Length: 327
Figure 1 (cartoon, helix red, strand yellow):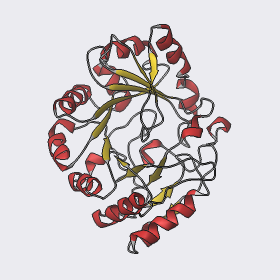
Figure 2 (cartoon, one colour; figure 1 turned 90 degrees about the horizontal axis):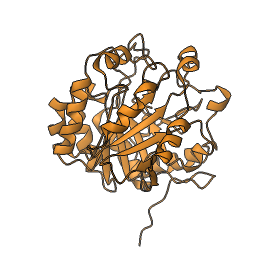
Figure 3 (tube, helix red, strand yellow; figure 1 turned 180 degrees about the horizontal axis):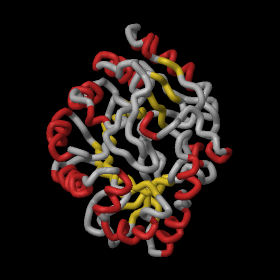
Figure 4 (cartoon, helix red, strand yellow; figure 1 turned 60 degrees about the vertical axis):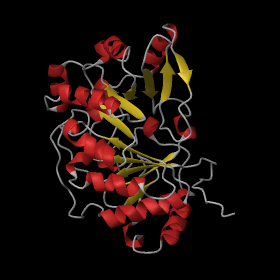
């Protein structure tokens, strides 16, 4: 019986989850990421469909089970449905997820689900339209919320809403976010603001710890639940009186990296072992080779993954802003 190799690093962490960026372009101007809007700083083209197929095959040969399509904003790719189809039909890939800002998600989602999409993450850093527009630069809150409802109607296996925690912009809304999942079967995930190369002053003014929310959850009777083997880094909580769940992504918490199970490939084919690493390895020159050779190269690269990020030391590696790799 053929044994599938695994992507395992020197700390015995196993990587079954690939975050695949398909563009670094974004049409939002979120104040914590691209406050001045997107600016292209490379002439290198995005990965083509055949290159994406080669990446998906190589990771699947190494035991990857889940691929999340990210950006920038992936819906800016006109061939997004084809990308999803290629990933979903790759032997060994069990689920395909999409992270989107939701700009025109209601128009696109039916075709994406037809292509094989299983899971959807949207973002709303405020539930007040004016505040949402202040944060993102767009009056699109109602489109995002409609996208959540449509995803549930279409039967996606997991529907999530991401909320970046911002001291001045949404800390006062925490109870509103709790109430939002009372009757809606989604996972709402609070994400601590992370320091990147471009947001130092903003980070210092806006960051606050998810531990405050975790304490509140426990006081109100929420209990930690199992998120499954190929899930992301969120600690998830459920409550018997709520249809939805609440997750916390706290990269500054102790041992955050000890359970890491995900790797990243950028929109131009660079393998990033960590969102906040200095180095990356270009896979693009290898993608015309047999998938087994690419898979073997990836296994060798993973052995160089460090034990933890250096965010605690104010080091964000080569990540200038989160749109570069989709967070």
